[in-house]
Image (cartoon, rainbow, N blue to C red; front, side):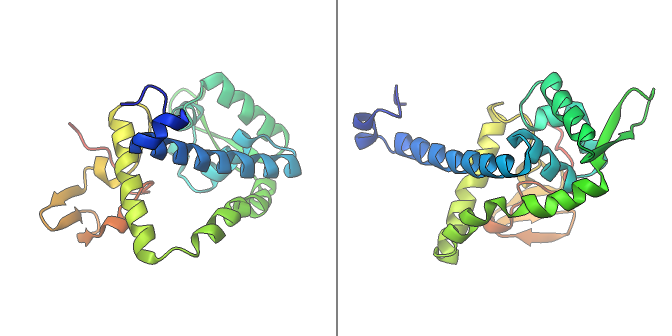
Length: 202
């Protein structure tokens, strides 16, 4: 394990260091693209991420508590972002089960219009991937899914809804199998964020 993966001398001899630097550059791409959209729309990057997440996930995943775990942030930080989005009429609170103090959030009509402006923020990245062969993208995806699951197992990522941690998933000798859809899966068909995910009990 390298002491400093960002040391250019270390990178000459250590592949893990070069991979870490590469992943850091990709993370920088997302930061830049999010900030560009944030400035244009008068929102912060986390507010944009919340709108995207709420737009594509069920209500039980859209509570302040879950959103804090999802984005590895404190509840007060998420709560403040939610307050701003409510004030901007981009999301609305939806009563949750229980004593009435808990709530989920959903997009308002204005929020759904805003999503149409936000969703293209990854277009430059998608265009950059267009030149890769399908086999290259499939190989990269296989590595990413395994890395993300390992990060979750090591408790660096607190929330994951990937096949590897799902009760419906089974590792077969010939590959992967999903008992929910009763079908085999290829490496590039493994889901990173599945709507049918149920956590596997250890």
